[in-house]
Every structure is written in structure tokens, then in C-alpha cells.
Amino acid sequence: MFNIHHRHPIFCIVPPHIMVQIAQNGTKEQRELALRALDLDHSVRTNRVTRSLMGGLRISHDSATAPVPQKQRMIYDSNHTQDLPGQPVRSEGQANVADVAVNQAYDGLGSTFDFYLAAYQRNSIDNAGLPMIASVHMGQNYDNAFWDGRQMVFGDGDGIIFNSFTSSLDVIGHELTHGVTGSEANLTYQGQSGALNESISDVFGSLVKQYTLKQTAAQADWLIGAGLLAKGIQGVALRSMKAPGSAYNDPVLGNDPQPADMAHYVHTAQDNGGVHINSGIPNHAFFFLATSLGGHAWEKAGLIWYDVLQDPKLRPSANFAAFANLTALNASHRYGANSVERKAVIDAWNRVGIKVTPHVAAAGA
Image (cartoon, rainbow, N blue to C red; front, side, top):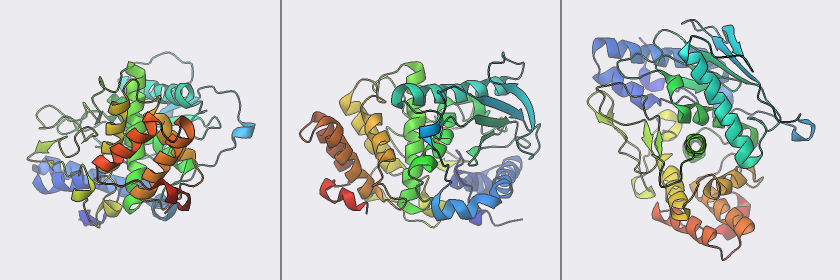
């Protein structure tokens, strides 16, 4: 049996610390499922771990030569094997099929494409019309979903702890946004830059769902993975942006370890320096900003975050403070130095214990 503490799934929605808890606290069947998921995470993606740790998963793009924006989706069926992509089962423009997971994946890719195009005039993941590919039915009762630098991969869940991973739109938006981040900022998947990478995916994953449901910031649930936890599991989601640390409290999953502010920052060597854990801090800052500004969160708060993601001053090694500084700087550029928006940005970061000093943002520290 391998050492579960040294398996580092990359860009997966269920973080390794949850799988470790299941492997330690679950029934025999639950432990076997968690270990199997950890093993599959590692074996499927070994060839990209080094690239991910060194600098994320870069997707090149050339928007100058990009075609007119048009969805190009292809869904494959892995048929419960580890073979990717699998057999093609639905392509762009084809009608619904009998397989619910196929249709959910197809619709989720489309909703994410529509969101980025409508909100930010972005042409697919790379802003150059990248075809959107997904494989469903990965492995046997696989308890995860991930972006592998080229496509989405979905497990069916085990029905005991996790439901099907195609059922959560914010999960799909989250994973595809890793491709957006790789295309733009290529944030290093380690420590605070890795936590920013995860947080950006949570932010835009939530915004994809909010946009699709036409929700305001006040109406949104601000949960990541709502509906993923099976009946009987004590929790509401994988993460809460509104109240980090409150998403679940279960005998098998343990307690949600996400901190809500820098005073509770978690120093750990696990999970590439706690990228899924400490992402709760910038998540919380975005929640404060979005609810303070009100209305649709993608229109102002999301636009500021998107501006920063495209800002050449955002370095791959950026920490929370550098990112915060750039949000204030970009809010100033877009809305004015004395604007309500810029002041709300500064206040949001202050509430999570990060002091904004936008005059040093140019350094991208």
C-alpha cells in the first residue's frame, strides 16, 4: 500500500486532505474507495506533476488569430476504465443522449463557455477558441473530477460519500478555470500562489453558476460543490466562500480546515503547501467584495479579478499580498482612485487580514 500522505493530486476538485481523512476514518469500503481515488489521481497524472509544481499548466493562446467565438464540445465515455479520452459519445450540436452524465458534462462546458464570452468577451479557455473536451465515467466509482491541462475528467462518485461529479456546475466551472489561469497567469501550484490558483477557480466556478442561474451576490449560496456530498454525510459542500471552515463536519470527512483570515493561515507541507486549504482566505475576500458591491458579482467584483488575471504584473509566484495590491490597482484603473469599488476592494482584504499597499503592486512581489 502506498503512503497516502505523499500523493498530491493536481487540479482536482476533492483535495487530498479529504481523501486522507476518509482513508483514516471511513469504513473498510470507504477507505478502499479513498485509496483507489488517490492512486488513480497519481497514476493518471504523473506525467504532469513536475510541470504543475514548477509553474502550473500553461495553455498558449493567440487571440489575434482566433476564429469567431463558437462552442466546440466533445464528450467521451471512459467506460469505467482509466483510458483517456475514451469513446466519443456526443459532439457539438448533437441532441441529448440517454446518459445523464454525458448531458450534464456537455451542458456544464457550454455554460462555462457562455459565461466567459458574455461576461468578459473571452473565447473559450485559452481566449482563442480552444475546443472543450470532457471524459465521463472515469474509473470505478472514482471520487473526483479534474482538469488535466487539456480536458475535463469526471468520476461517477461512489454514492456513499460523493455523488456524480458532473452534477455540480460550479465544479465544472472551477476545473475549466484552471485552464484559464494557466493560459493567463500560470500561477505556480505551491504555497500562496497555488492557493490563489485554487481560489481563482472557486471564484469563477461560483460565478459560472451565479450567471447561469441569474443570481445576485445576495442570492448566491457561495458554496463550491453543493450537492456533491451524498445523503447522510454531514455537510453542504466541499468549501464555503461565505464562511470558510463551515462546509462540512463529518465523522468520516473530518472538519472543514479552511481558514477565513490570515490569523488562522495553515502552515503545512501537505497538498503543495495547503493550496486547497488556504484558498479560503482570498475566497472570503472576494465574497466580502461581491456582497459589498451588490448586484451581479461577475459585473464588478469578478471583472476586477479578471483584470488582475490578465495583468502582466501578476507573476507566477505571486502571494496573497501581491494579488491584493493588484486588485486595488486594477479597481483604480477601471473605476477611479477614489471610487467606491476601490475602497470596497481594500476593505475586503482588510477584513481577512491583508493590508493593501497598491504602490508596490508593480513589483508583483
